[in-house]
Image 1 (spheres, rainbow, N blue to C red):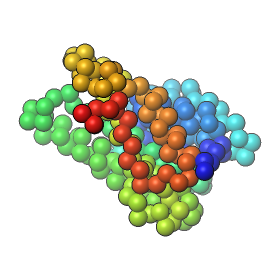
Image 2: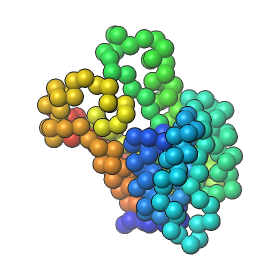
Image 3: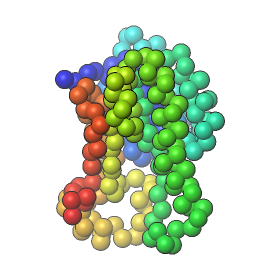
Image 4: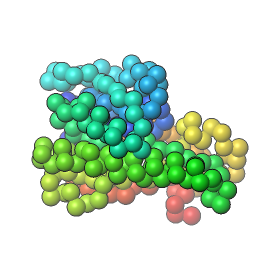
Length: 219
């Protein structure tokens, strides 16, 4: 069974660019109202301005944005407060950073940034919004374990492979990397967004771990 996103409220971190922006654009076209979160306020404003207006008559609030660092737990309180008067139906933890280097060459500062953003940012997001969703009796989040299912909250994980975004533009070995991917190319942010839309709409999709990597994980 699938549900409509019309009139739903989505909070999307990393929504100013790359995969997060692609998800926001697709969700908005499906009728959802999106609140985007990222560090770059200017990029957020441009992202929100480019979203399709919410078509659902019942949805009164437009798309919005909050400039914040997901690695800062205090910033999540500001985001929750911003949407406190709105029911939050979907949380997408898409904020992330990457380093194009071997682990043994990655500096301590870069390692901390990756852990704080990719891991702790997701944990802080779930801690901030799951209590709100439990009170609502429904909702879903992209990166939480299955135990919240009893509260009507679905939790799924997307595992993108190498995707064509600004984080991969500086990679100088794309040809060699593409040769290792069974599909023969890097993925597109829109292809990851399609998977996110499926997980958001399919009401029986719960505790899924979905690889979007062109088959790389199977090699």
